[in-house]
Amino acid sequence: MSVIRNIMYLGVGMATATRDKIEQAVDDLVKRGELASADRAKAIDELQQRAQTAATEVRKVVDDRIESLGKRFKWADEIDTLRAEVERLGAKVDELEKAGKASGTTRKSAGGKKKS
Image (cartoon, rainbow, N blue to C red; front, side):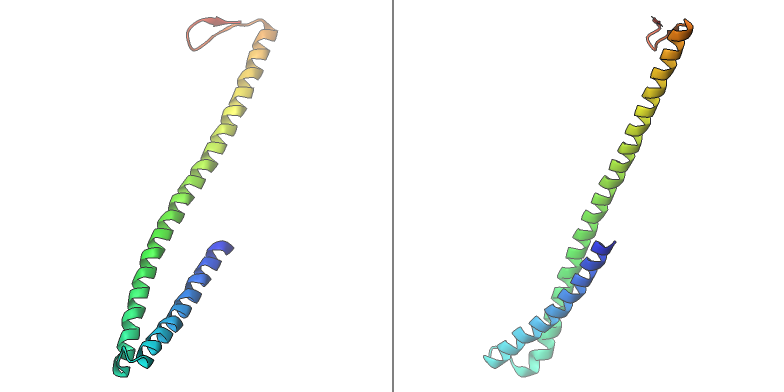
């Protein structure tokens, strides 16, 4: 969970840094005369909105990837659980076969042939 929390903090930090960078970039445009100082606030708001839209799209992609990875890890856990269960059942079958041989009994296999 700490990794996810750190990613969230990074996102908040990037949003703050982005706002600062946007303001600096717009101020540079105003200083160079490429943007009227009256349009400064509007330009900052527009750029901030675009940055937020892009961040939302990135978050969606990241969330989708995290969900996909979560499903893979869950399946991996289930596969490990099933593998352990198969091994346990295999050992039980071996144990039962040994007990059957020791007592002299035979049983039919899945194919219908007698096993001794």
